[in-house]
Structure formats: C-alpha cells, structure tokens
Length: 105
Length: 255
Image 1: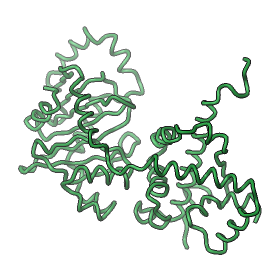
Image 2: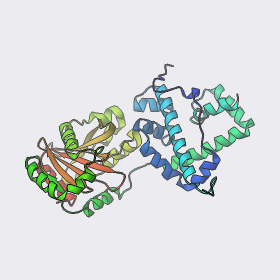
Image 3: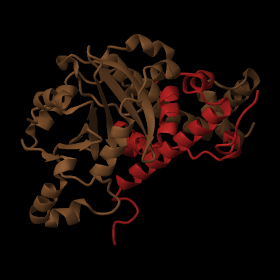
Image 4: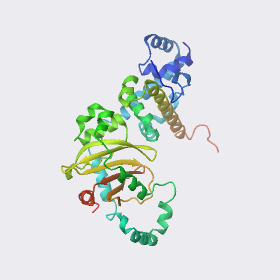
C-alpha cells in the first residue's frame, strides 16, 4: 500500500498523549462544549477527517475516498486532530481546577 | 507487546484499522496491563461522549428563524454605501465615525470594501458540480436547502449560511469551496426561474464594520454583509443587481 507521509510523521513514530481519567472527570459534562470550541479552532482539513472518523464512523479508506486524500494523509491528519483535541481538553481541565496545587499565592 | 507499542496503536485499534495479528497483540496486552486498560477506558468513554455530543443530524429547526430575528433586532438603518456616492459617505464618516474608525478600522481587520470587491468578482463562479465531485449522492439534494446544509455539516464540515431564499422564489443549485483570506469557505448558490443568482456564505473573520448589516456595491453587484451575533461570524450575500437585493433586504427586515 502506497502511503503518503508528506504531511507529517507516521502516527506510529510519535508518542500519543492520552487524556487522563482525572482530566476527563474534571471536564465532566462540559466535554461536549469544550470539544465544540476545539472544533472551531481546528483547521478545517483536520476537522473534516476527525468528524468523519469520530462521528460518522467511516473507515480510513472511506475517509480517503470521501475527502479525496491518500490513506497516509488521513492517518496523519487524524493523528494531528486527536492530539489537538486531547491537548485542548487537557488544558480546559486544568483551567477548571483552580483550587488544586496552589491554594496560596 | 509492551505499553509504548500498545499506546501507539491504541487509536488504530479503536478505529478497527489494525491487521488481525496486530489486533490480537493489543488485545492481549490490554488484558494483562492495568495502566493501559485505564487509558483505553478513558479513551473509550471520551469517544462515546463525543460521538453523541458532536453528532449533527440536521440544523435545529428554529435556527434560521432565530438568525432572522436577530438580524431584525439590529438597528433598522443599515450603513448603506454606494461606490458612486463615496465622497458623501466619507464626509459623513469624517464627522460621525471619527472615534469609531479608530476602533473598527484597526489593522488586522478585513476592510469591508476590499472584501466586497473580491466576492463580487467571484460571484457566479460557484458551480453545481461541486456537490458531484465532493459527494456524488449530494447531487440528489439540489433544491433542498436543509439537505444541503446537512451535507455541508456532515461531509464537508464547513460552516454554511442558513438563510433561505425560497420565499423569494430561489432554489439552491450548487456551491463551491473558495480559498478565501486563508480560509476555506463554502459558498452556496441559489437561482430563480429567470436565472438570477444569489451567492452566499458564512465567514469567520474580523471585519472592520459595526455590528449591523452593511450594503456595498462593487462592480455593479450589491454585496450585503450581515454580522451574526456570535463568534465574529458574518453572512455575505452577493446579488446580480440592486433589484434582486431589494426583496431580500425587505424579507430580512433591513428595509
């Protein structure tokens, strides 16, 4: 299978920063709002790939055909989209935890 | 299979994109490793929530109405600027907008005149084939604004102008994505029985104007900018001529 990594490193070569259980708990019911805000900030190229995968459950191959980009590009964009989202959600969680860590200035 | 390898493959595992042996390896490791299992469970929960939260089956029924109402609630007199009367406007602006100019015409904001000139030049270059290229089954949606919106939201993921021209006898016929000021913007086109065209789009960019509708005329084409309430969005409409713009302004409660 010919893959095109030109838009970034192959996903397997990069470390993935997953969201912690603690962060997810902190965001709680606001995770939807936080994710929607993140989507607005996300470059459209990444957003469409992310939505097609996460909401519409398309396979990488189906996304590649729908958007008209190579399979490798689907994978690298999906990787970047998820990293972007996890980073934003994790930042949002940290903002919502003002009490912890520094109770005194 | 160790933790690092498993975590690298977790996304693809959850996307069901691994080969059968790779899949087995990840599964085996997850069964043995508590910490990777924890990561997996958080990720699974996040995915389930997002699938529900981000699903956009169709724009809410009342949204178009709410947008119209919001526009109607804007001050009744739009800032109407015609190129030919530019000197008059400039004189008025000099008196009334001296301070406002400093606020609204700051650098980094898109100048409405430049914006109008560019969109007016591109008016009419949207094409029905766009739907066919991007998504063959969307061709069936021509004439169905709700369907087209859904198509854009679900499959192309661009923001789409929600205004409906059906009451004026226009039907959606096509669209295009223009690279526009560094953004990809979905432009849709509506056409009436005489072949007159309205192209329109929703853009997210700071524009140097007040938060009320603004009508400009560029290359003989009326360009209407209608700022939306939230997120610095603006609906842009381009009409073939002034006579086409009038009924729309009336429908929107601008005139």
